[in-house]
Structure formats: structure tokens, C-alpha cells
Length: 162
Image (tube, rainbow, N blue to C red):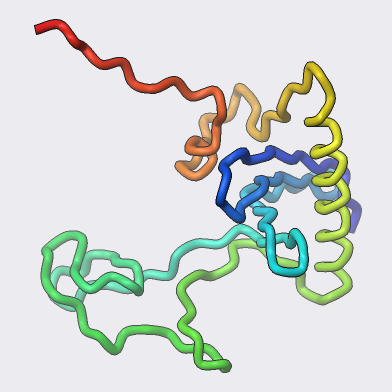
């Protein structure tokens, strides 16, 4: 597996463990987006992209996150025993969208991402630093988490005339 490009978008939210989003290109052919760099107890670590696990409401068939107590569509109470429990007794709430198959692949991927992360932090300290854009102009993709981290957002204008 050859990692041909690593893009890091630093997140500047104080008191948050999320440090950056990452997008990688593998063998100049496949892109994996929404990789997160999170500040853990033993330093930064890489979290692969994931999605929330859902199930269906027995009454209306609407999709709901496993932590939901009430249906998003009909408002009915959902059964309490619908959670997925993994081997160590914790509840499984998310499923990886993309992930390495073995430990050596994870180490290679995490090593390249964390190296690029350290380099991006050093670049950010220089005058005239311009953050990397993860998504090109021709792509209409922009998820809510990424949009919430933009530092150039303007506060909403409030009409004060009466």
C-alpha cells in the first residue's frame, strides 16, 4: 500500500480533543476522507471514518440511532433492549466505513498521518500560514462536522431595525 498524499486540516477549538481532519490518497487511485486525529491520553491517535449504527422503529419503520429512546419519525418509545454489545461489554454505537485489515497496515497508515500532522502543526506556526483545503472546488461534499470547524465563519447578521 502506497500512501501518495496526506492532507491535514487543523481544528482550532479549545477544550476539544479533536485536533484535525485528514484525507489520504492511496496509490494515486483511492481517497479516504474524514479520518480524525484525536488527542488521547498517550498522545494523538488516528480514528478511521465511521457511521452511526441505526435500527428501525417497530411501529413506523423509521431509522433511529441506537441511543435514541424515541422514534425520530413517529415519536413513539423505542424498545430498551435493542443495543449491540461487543465482547468487552461496551455498547457498539459506530461502525468503521474504512479501516486497515491488519496491525502493520494500521501502523503504516497512522505513522504517515501523524507525521503529516506534526509537519502541519509546524507550518501553522509560520507567518502567512494558509490552511490546507480537504475538498476541491468541484466537489459539493461538506459534512456538518467539517463545516463547524471552519475558522473563517462569520456570525449571523441580526436585523436591529424595528
